[in-house]
Length: 282
Image (cartoon, one colour):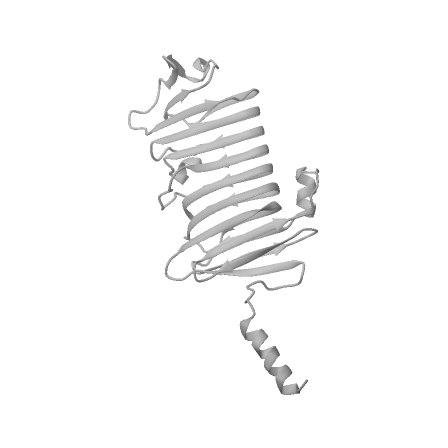
């Protein structure tokens, strides 16, 4: 085979080969998240098992997604034109879904999203060993979290400047789900399914708008914290809530000492078949 022909074949392969945004060794991957004048970005995470840490970057234009694959595999890509991050982590199939096992074996991604970005967040992962999602200085227009097994902490420390489309959804089938300062999400409709395990929901300092909250807990413990003075209506529970400052009105439990200017927090409950604690935060 002539050298020139070989050279042209290699050149053609290089010119038409797909471009990988990942940088690093075969065990790690580093992807730059660059946004243009449109600050919107879509984060799609779907796979068998993974660990995720998410927060805002210092820059308003650029962030990163770093993956340590540990003993797992998968891929992470970023479509810069459409500003879509796709992450699909995986490990060999196992019956062991304990948090400690997933933390050690599954891919771990540390993500810093450009500060002030408007996010569509879609997460559907079977097992999560470590999940901490801090949306400080980030804005959400869509939110869906679906985890079958694992521990996940979600916080909204700053007020959302976007309008959440549809219903914000949180689901952990078995494990520990903790949500902090939910009111800052400013979603009109929120569905939280804690499944089997522990569910902790902290509304935050102040309810910012009328909110319909559907709480579904099967077996386990539910800890609900509401700012004092909030107007609350709860339906769907057979528990006696008079000890928490509610009075019964037909099938609805209503607060008696709320602020007249407070938005309405309407809660529809299912379960839990376990411990339930309601706390009033000053």
